[in-house]
Image 1 (cartoon, one colour):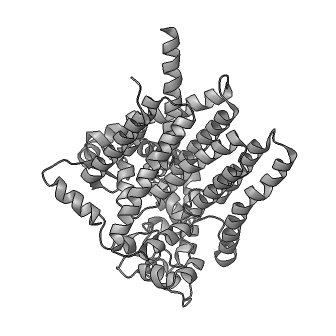
Image 2 (cartoon, helix red, strand yellow):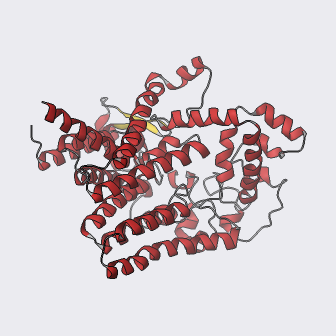
Image 3 (spheres, helix red, strand yellow):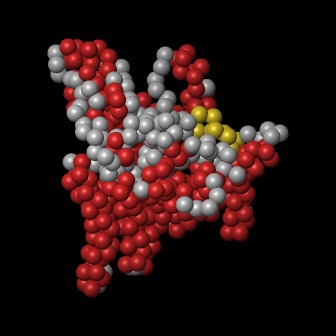
Length: 473
């Protein structure tokens, strides 16, 4: 059966409309489709933006206080250490649109979700994935419960996922056509990703752009090779300027000041080690303080002066939620980092158990699935969420292993396709490594940002397998 492009587009658009109208959140990070009798009313409420809480913006931990986003954006951004700046700028732009903010966020998120589906379809087809396979995988992407949740929250995931999918497409287009314009799009999108999500640190961006430039320049005329240098350097210099500002103002080399807070989650199960090492003075009292506690909890440990800058001084944002950009979080996170590294060195086997928990979460559909005694685990999450990682892990590992083997034996692959596949595999490995080695609660949401790359690798593997079966038949 030949699937026409028009039929595929209509099917995917219809699936998008039905799934977004019937979606309902079950737990932070995931949801399901609900076709109950109240579906029309819930769909209308979602269109009005009522699926997002009225205080969704001020409640977000990664955003500055809403009044600062509206009235003092640029000065506050200068003193933003908790996160890179672009998502705050993005949300500040939405707040300036006419109409209620939750509705605007919902509509823009839906637009990003639909754009991501188009980009996944385009990426799969450009790389040579069969139309039927591309249709099935794009439909799977649309029905991903994590993607639907992120579209119903104030969260940078949909924006980052769309930028990364577009970056892969731009890289392939640049390699095929020798286009500096497409390479500029590729490099700009990578720098924008680093300036949006701290997980994509500046060394990642510099390495990806530099290696991409080398791959692009190889075999090109000398004039084109010379011109690629400023094209690749320009967005990287912008990123470097922001990072230099962070170092001068906060002494910070990372995109976020929260590294210590995130890594301390990997000390779960180390209570005996914490008590023993604290008694010997090898770690601080913070090992017994929950991460992201209110600023007043940390002040007895760190002498942080008042600065007169609301973004750094406020303990709580206007809605009563903790201001996690408070200046005391900078030394607190660094102390958590020092303590955590000492604990991990003392109990590496327990760290590996936490990494296994992170891999389990990253392979499934649900956030925060910390290991518990079996009966509690089943009662809390249910069988669907519990079994999903046992399906996801073989698919993820299989896609990565197939991709590595395929680019190592590139017979039948065009140069552009092979280099794009290397880019896809390297980024999947990078994201999963950062997610599973440093963080535990949101690893599935981190993975979701590069699901388009996994769909591309799976699509290519399935297309190749179908082609071989056709030859045998």
